[in-house]
Length: 203
Image (tube, rainbow, N blue to C red; front, side, top):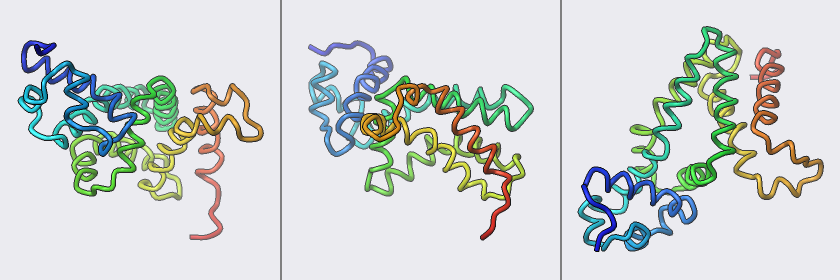
């Protein structure tokens, strides 16, 4: 017998239960039968809610990203100062990455996905609004750097240390405080403050 009742609520719960599966195994490593088993559904019941795996996967990524994106966008509006807005964004992104390992791993799999059309759908329908907000913010900083490249650099300066946390602790010079989101955020912010307005010697 199926575990859930009511199509709307069932879709939400299926997506919630699917996040850890896709976070661990990625798109190619998860089958609809795997999802059905985790959700306590028959495969036929799962297909009633999601017609194919790609549909489910896209909805799962959107579900995982939506709430976090909304919180980050709100923090971008907490001040009239672009620098304060940027510091708020970096700090909150660092805390998000430190707190939600499933989300972080899911985003890693998204970037590794070799299916270009699937990635394009995610950018268009899931990631674009947040990226445009960061792009617009860094464009206000009046630095010499391309806003697109600067936006990508900022996001990855925050996320990559958390993605590499397990191996990073074996690197020479590692200290436990490096894992603290506020420490990483302050490092990235200071790095940007020192580097954004430095004169570039080459184009």
